[in-house]
Image (cartoon, rainbow, N blue to C red):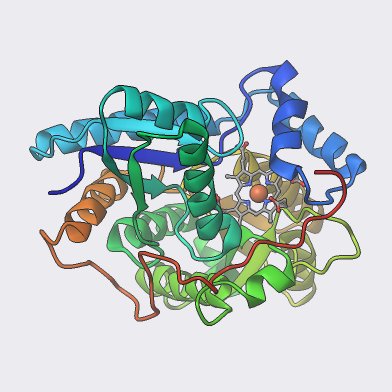
Length: 342
Ligand SMILES: CC1=C(CCC(=O)O)c2cc3nc(cc4[nH]c(cc5[nH]c(cc1n2)c(C)c5CCC(=O)O)c(CCC(=O)O)c4C)C(CCC(=O)O)=C3C
Ligand SMILES: [Fe+2]
């Protein structure tokens, strides 16, 4: 098939209290995120003992991928490396070289186009290969999967399940609220080869999940987890402001579906299960948060299918019509201007 390894790439997160600040400095190096914001976000991690759930979720996903590959006779050794915390991608790529890997396929735990969710993983690959030097394996990144049935259907089932936990007598005043990570407006404008692709793909995913889960209900796409300096505009509205507006309009219940994410990591368990849930309670809104795909067997199978489609063994499974791309054109998703100390 031309490839001799599979590489899982993710964001990374701390697993000890002492790792929280070094991790946050890795994430925000050169991005101009104010100290106060870092201290505030550190508290979110300390609330969970300094342990982000994301690394364990990656271990679980990789174990499920191993089992799925084996069950389908796909003999590819698997590896895992992160952008911001151990296991760091550069160390993983060094291990791949030591193991004799020459050409790997990389899967990033982000479904969408854009700088943070796609292009930055290409930069991570290039930096890791440069760090390893001669003999570093070639690594190609698998495509964005925002409309793959293995991603959309688990989200849709989760919305249906969350709805089942709300009062059916109030269904007529219930609303679906899809959320994704906010990004700077300038980053959204330059996402994808023609710009605007992060938000466009998210809209498509939201529409697909809505149609599959609860086509009778109204829905919105809003944003969460804003970072960065206050003077830089980021995508709005924030989920918390949006919940206030919905309550004012007479909405009684919400299902919040984090379609921007593949697992229940810290941005989900803090920003939604803690903050947004508290906002809803204050407003007297019924609130149910839909699960993310995690290790849903359909999502795990999707990873194998992305490998098989890349190696021309199956045709791509797609529910939407927006472009997805395997290789980023040069002009695609430029990095944000670097600010502050780097
Ligand atoms: C688009 C996007 C995704 C989705 C795509 C993907 O999944 O890749 C994502 C995911 C995540 N973001 C995460 C955590 C953080 N993101 C931050 C900051 C930032 N995110 C940004 C964008 C995104 N982020 C941006 C433009 C910044 C500003 C700094 C910069 O330009 O890079 C900060 C800094 C502190 C702060 O929040 O201010 C933290 C701690 C975690 C880990 C959670 C855990 O530990 O479980 C995950 C999965
Ligand atoms: Fe983030």
